[in-house]
Image (cartoon, rainbow, N blue to C red):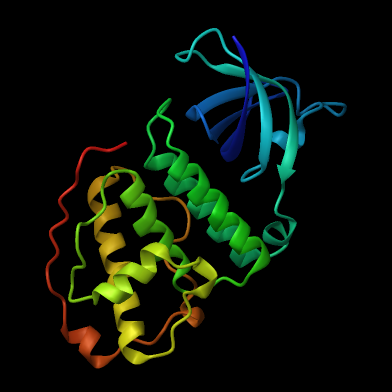
Length: 237
């Protein structure tokens, strides 16, 4: 079977002497694993199609959905050059891709997840990274994967909770002390979820926040308040 689908590269690794393997999140087929033969040779083609967080139209050959497919061609849509030239943005992009790979089963399409990742990369390409990028993306991928919370926890206001789930990532800049505390609580919700439901810790962005100089200082109220949160998952999609 030969088919074409839009996809974003989540992960790549060298395979054998000249091949590469990639994990690709596609619009209509979900996450699939593919081989790109010969791309590591000096005259190898399709190398750009195997770079992390590249977005392209892929032409794929696969005998069936349970076998490793082969990329036979494609057309690049976005390579996000500004992300690749900025270490902070690149770190965030790798983190988003790892979250997608770890919270997404194989061969289960979800257009919401695809568009969420594409939105995050696009806003990161043309905007500035802010301290809310990671918790906002994590909360949204949790919701798309079926692990979202029905209502705010840790005394986060409904208005702030809604903004973290619906606003553009680039608009989530906060200076008010109460908002900064709510942002820190959102990060704590995400941290507890990831530590509980991932058997192996994430390799990217440790701890899973921006560098210390980009984070708000802890307030005395935040240091004293450590309420417990119960995360009740629903069936993953």
